[in-house]
Image (cartoon, rainbow, N blue to C red; front, side, top):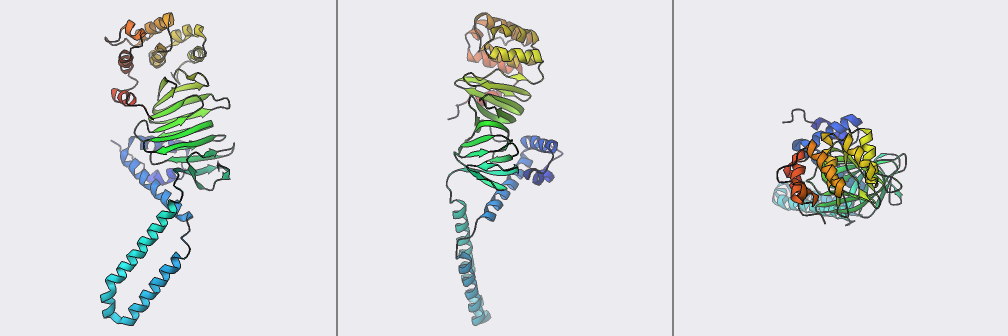
Length: 371
């Protein structure tokens, strides 16, 4: 299926040495190619371990003890001659093995000295800070700690073994959870770019007014100083949710979230400006903007109209139903009365007919909610 693998570029991608376009192509390939993704994960794991070991000093006296044991073994060997060497060979081998194991246990103990979960952070530019400390080229972001970038700084977070998140200038991000199938960041302000290759619903980003739930994807998410956020999906799907309100955003689409209102209605980025402006006004409570939304909608904008069905009532819902039905006729089991009642089965059946997400994706999303 994949003729042009990217394994020759993995080292450069890992160390952020590719151009933006090259990095994007490698990331897209990794999302679709299990073979290259496995190679990349192995390379990244090796780099992480090497970085840790390079920074840790051996326990005081360990090398002196090992050297003394080796010197004594050499002296004993020279005194006893070849015959004795032959007889004591297994004992020397066991002594060497014991020393190696002791060193390994000591190294692992050092690596585990901080039991709090943490994710690796790589400095990409400037002087990012973890907590109150300016980070080195590499660092660790512990649970409940903040990573902050000023206007000249950028950083990259390795999300366990499931993905990567680039933190852009002027951002503040906290590691909120790092266990099992819940990997969660909090974006207080700024902009991040997430690339996740884990199974759906394992990576989450909280903002002041919505939670972004990864469904196997690549996306950007930004939050301004007033807490308003914007999500733009470049690959896969993301669900935006807040207090029971849900927006499903596919590749090529965006969605805004606002304090006290939660996620708005998603739209495709190629929609016309009158459509997008009217949709923003409608989300803010201007019912008069619905007429422009309906008049400017295309078949592709069925994504937006489907979401509006459950966010309007009365005559407004009737007008949306009629326009959506004209663009994408509902399946036989989705009746007007049932949709008006908000029947979940009917809405789900109509969603699947829109061709925006296959049945398997929809089944995954409708499974048990995350903790």
